[in-house]
Image 1 (tube, helix red, strand yellow):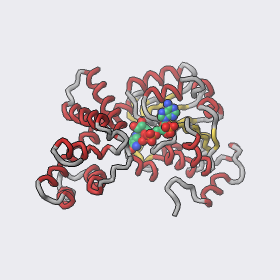
Image 2 (tube, protein in one colour; image 1 turned 60 degrees about the vertical axis):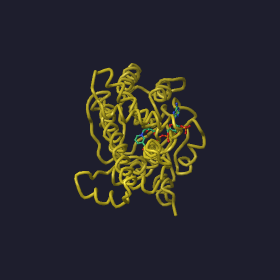
Image 3 (cartoon, protein in one colour; image 1 turned 180 degrees about the horizontal axis):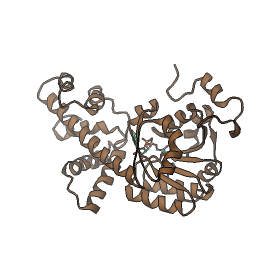
Image 4 (cartoon, protein in one colour; image 1 turned 90 degrees about the horizontal axis):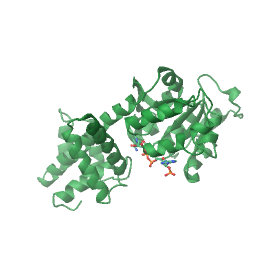
Length: 321
Ligand code: NAP
C-alpha cells in the first residue's frame, strides 16, 4: 500500500512528463518553492506536485526533503536559491522567528527573490508579526500573504484545508493555482494580518473545544458511564461538533500521536492572549485554555497531540492520566 506521502508512479510520469523545463508547464502550473516539510508542509507540498506544479523544496534537515525529492521535486541549497527561480514561495514552519529567518534572514527568500515574487506564509504566527514581515518584504518588491490553515494533518493529506488569507488581492489571485491544490474553503479575509486574525479566532474555538470535549468525556468516565456511548449520544444533538466527532474518537482510542503538537497549540493560545492583552479584550475561556496548554508543556506532554489535554484533566482529577 502507498503511504499518503507517496506519489504513484503514473502520477509522477504525468507530472514530470520526461522534461522539467518550465516552458513545458501547462495551464495554471507555476514554479513554486516550498519551505518547511513537517507534519503539514510535507503533504501540502506533495499535493502541489500532484497538481502539476514545478516544485523546488528546502528544509533545514536533509532527511525532511527526501520524500519530496523521491516524489519528483527539486531540492535547493537555501531559501534564497529556492526563491531565485520561483514565481511563488510558500513557507510552513513553526512560529514568527522561524518565518523571519527563512524569509528575511541570511540566505533567506528576500535575498534571492526577484521583484514581483509572491511569498505566502501558511504557518500560524502573530498577526502583528505577519504585518511586519509583509512590510519588510514589500520594500524589496516581494508581495506577502499570510495564509494560515485549519483542517489538520488529515486536511493537509486530503488537500481540503481551510485557507484564511490576508494581503493584497493581486497576491491572493496569484496564489490561487497553488491554493486550489491544498485547500477547499479558501477565503480572502482582508488586508495583511487578517488571515492570522482569523486563524487566532479559529484557535479560540478549537482550543476551548478540545478542552470541553475532554472535560465531557472525563466527566462521563469518572461518573461510571461509558464515554463512547456518551459521545455517540451527544453527536445527535446541539453538543455535536467535528471536534467531538474526530478528536473525541481519538481520545477514546487514546491515540495521542501528533497530529497537532500540544506545544504548537500553546503557541497559538499565546498568540490569542497576546492580542487580547494588546487590545484590552476579555477572553475568559481562551485564557483558561491557554493555562491548560501551559500546564501540558510543563507536564512533559508538549510533543503529544493536543488531545492529550485529556491526560492532564485525568491527572488533575486524581486519575492516572
Ligand atoms: P512540524 O511537524 O513541527 O513541522 C514544522 C517544520 O518547519 C519542520 O519540518 C521544521 O524543520 C520546519 N522549521 C521550523 N522552524 C524552522 C526554521 N527556523 N528554519 C527552517 N525550518 C524550520 O509542525 P506542523 O504541525 O507541520 O506545523 C507547521 C505550522 O502549521 C505551525 O505554525 C502550526 O501551528 C501550523 N498548523 C499545524 C496544524 C497541525 O495540525 N499540525 C494545523 C494547522 C496549522 P525540521 O524538520 O528541520 O525540524
